[in-house]
Length: 449
Ligand SMILES: [Zn+2]
Ligand SMILES: [Zn+2]
Image (tube, rainbow, N blue to C red; front, side):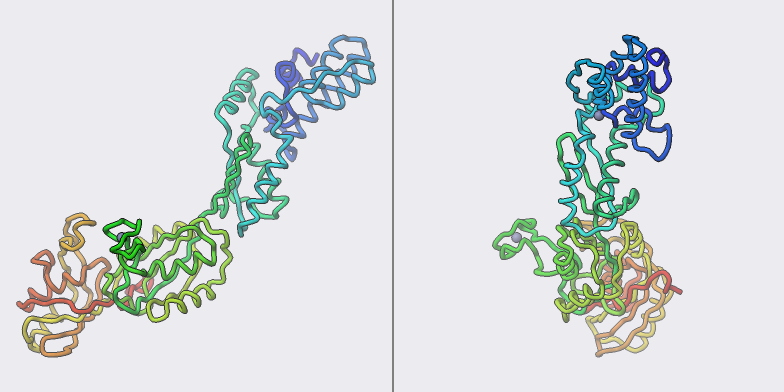
């Protein structure tokens, strides 16, 4: 007899006697039995078989038969059981709402329609469905599963995510991606809240800064901290533009992104140019709606709008992991050009001595006083591979320095009151100050020799 056994049918009937369950919620308790079928199919198959058994018993005038058919009709919503009962001249009670999902699984299409409508504003190839379920609903199912010692069931969250994901896939033709989805669709099916999370778009490239006076990143006004005040002319910014904004703004317009974040392989001072083949950077566009950009067009627009100020090149799409890598590139080699002015005239022998003493040496550099407010006070060792010097006037020289990234070049010139050793000032024995500083090259690890 199915009523006493603990096989699939016996267990299913006991559960249905206890609580109303829709096809999905019944089938889900046996989700890991059988392949190539959905829980809905499992639940339906079990109910159909139980209806047949009920019919068989009823025809043998076993009262258990009618009891099974009534349970199936009222607690299982089985139309087959209802029809058998009607044909046997029996009254059929009202169908009851599913105890576990409260009827949700039969109303998924309106939820999916809502999600698809929101998704239509976005350009994407891959997505992931995230499900939020009220705690009390999850706990209710946990208790139910414990009571019936469910061994092969899956969670409602799992099933909802899979089933809704499949429905969205069928309508949109997009792919599910569990590792790096472009779009995450957060759904609370019980409140019908749907939220679209568009993951960041990352574009890597190199920038050259052709003029002095532009900071790398957006610099907030120190007085109002970005709110806007009379000192910043209500812009909220200390400087009207930055490398970050010159690159980000055109891309934000093209992607309809909401915000951006700039990651550079190190940074040059505001008064230093960045020349040569440029400094690697990654621009992160947050919550973009468009992501299929023609990067050569992006490059053209940025360079046209920032003409004479900055220039970008080598744009390519990267993923989030590249941001970590670009931070490490700070340690790669850099080539600087600095114009140095001395307090007195200097001789050719002194220039030669400077060149020799600043080639293939290690500089001990205590954190410069000017950056102490944002960096820890410690001594760094930085290598200078090579220095070349050209005289410009009796008391001015141009130095080309190839060194390890992270060397503070202005302090290499001044000595920063002894915090940097050796220094140009100390070697010459005369006060020296940097007039102009440029980064000529940021060398990739692959270019290093
Ligand atoms: Zn249900
Ligand atoms: Zn201000």
